Length: 122
Image (cartoon, rainbow, N blue to C red; front, side):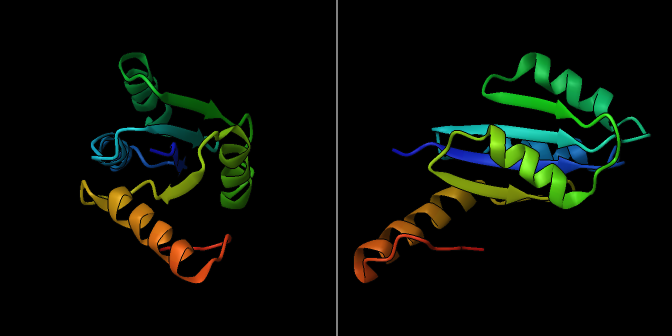
């Protein structure tokens, strides 16, 4: 089973970030890491993420010291990721528990069928 890196960027999302993170944590795919980049939020988002980070394993919390924007936050998370696959969740997402299973299986089947190695599944 391949490691999947679930990455989430966060900016001023205190109303939704906890739900989004637990949506990632509750994925049925067992071999996963979750990387969250707080892009210098000015609300309570980072405090919420710190509480989650203290109790969840395979969870990495990073913080930008100044707001760099969504693409930079994604790049920060991608550089830190170790997974063979990367799944991007938004800071206000609620995902079905089998999203990663479904996407990884589609990618693997597509690779076998078409012999492609670079596939985007969204």
